[in-house]
Length: 567
Image 1 (tube, rainbow, N blue to C red):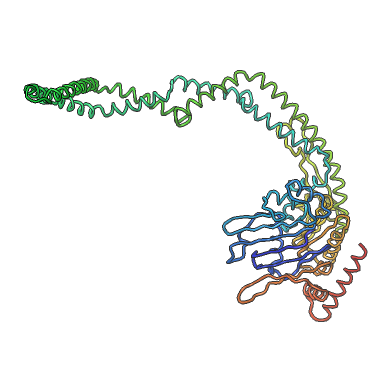
Image 2: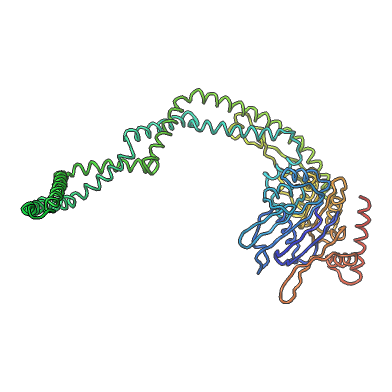
C-alpha cells in the first residue's frame, strides 16, 4: 500500500507531502481546491502520460515520488527481481518532467522506463476516475470486466499463440499472392515486369556512354567549328607545321657555325611530328562531325526508354536490375508454389480448427463466470441499496466454424452486453439504456470491489465515486467503502475524493485540501484533520451552521464508528 506521496510544482502545488495509512482515507475540501490534482499527480508517478500543462506556472519542471509498502506483495517483489531490482520491504518510485519534454523515471533510485513503471505499479494501485463510468457503458469494456472474473487456465494464452501462428501462415501465403485469383494476377504482373526490363538489356555502362554520346551530338556544330579552326591553325598555309618547318630549315643553314643549332633542329623536328599527329587526329574528328537527326532521335529514344524503366522500378539502372532479380525469384517461386501453398493451406486449416475449439472453451468459461459475476454484482448492489436489481450478461450467438474463419480473433468470438433492471417488473435492458448517474456510481463501486478482490490490488483510489447519490444511498456507499478498506485478508487501502458528509464521517483518516492565497499567489495545502476537524468538515458538507449542525455531525461520526466495529 502507499505510504507517502510527495508532489513538487504540479498545478497549484508548490511542495506537498502526504502520508497515508491503512483503511479508508478521505480527501475533502472546497471545489477547485486541488483534490483531483493530487490524484492526477499519483497517476503521473504510476506511469500515466506526462502532461506538461500540469507543471506549475513559472516553473521549468515538476516531480512526484511515491513510497509503497510491498513486504507482503509477492507479485510486485517478483517483478522487481525480474527487472533487476533488489528485493526490499518498501518501493520508492519517482518521476520528473520538464517543459522541454524530458521525462525521468526512477525505481528504487535507478533510472527506468515507463513500460517497467506501469508494469510494476499496475500491481499496486487501481485508480477509478470519473471517466470510467462512461467507459463501462461500452460493450468492449464490459467483456474485459467479465474476463477479469474468469479463470482461463491457459486457454487464452494458447489462443493468442495460435493466432500468432495463423498470422505467420497468412503472411507466407500472401507471399505467394494470396488466393488463386490473386496469385494469377501477381503472376501476370511479374511476367510483364520481367519482360519489360529484360527486353531493354540494361547496363550501367551503356547509360553512361549514351549520356556522353548524346551530349556530344547536341553540341556537334560547336565541336566542328572548334576542331576546324584548330586544324587550320596547325596545318594551314601559315599554320604551326609550316612555321616550324621554316624555323628548322633556318637552323640547319647555320648549323656549321652554331653548335647548338643541330640539337635545337632535332627538337623542332620532334615538335613538328607531334603536331602533325595532333592535326591528323583532329582531321579524323572533323570527318566524324556530320550531324545526323536520325541518329539523335534514335539515341534520345533509347535514353527515354531507360529513364522510363528507372522511374517505374527504382530510380537508377542498378535498382531496376535489382528489381528484375527479385521479380524473377518471386516468379520462379510462384511457378513452384502449388505444393507449398497446399501444405500451408492445410496448416492454416489445422490452426483455425484448433483456434475454434479453444474459442469454444473460452466462451464456455465466460458463460460459467458470467453467472457467478451476475450473482456477485447483485449481492454488492444489495449492500448499496439497490435490492431487487437484476443483472445478466448477454452473449452473441456462437458462430459456425466457417463464419468464425472469416474473422478469427485472438480473444475468441464472444461479444457481450451487460443487461440490468433496477426496478422489479421491468425487463432487462443494456446498461447504457437504463442506469442513472447514481446507480452507475454504485454499479462501478460494486464492479471495482469484485475485480479488486480478484486482482488483489492493495490500494484503490476513487475520484468522486459519489456522483449522483445522496441521503440514505450515500450512507450505504460510505459503509461499502469502509468495508472494502477493512478487508484484512488483502490488506486493502482505499483513498477517496468526496463531497459527501457520510463518506467523510466514515473515514479512518481525513485529509483536508485547501486553496489559499499568499503574497498574490495561490497554493494548495493539505492538513490532517483531528476529531474536531472531522466534525467541522462533516458539518460543512451537511450545509449546517451552529451547534445543532456540529451535534448532527458528531452523531453521524459516532454512528459510523459503531458501524465499523461490526465489520
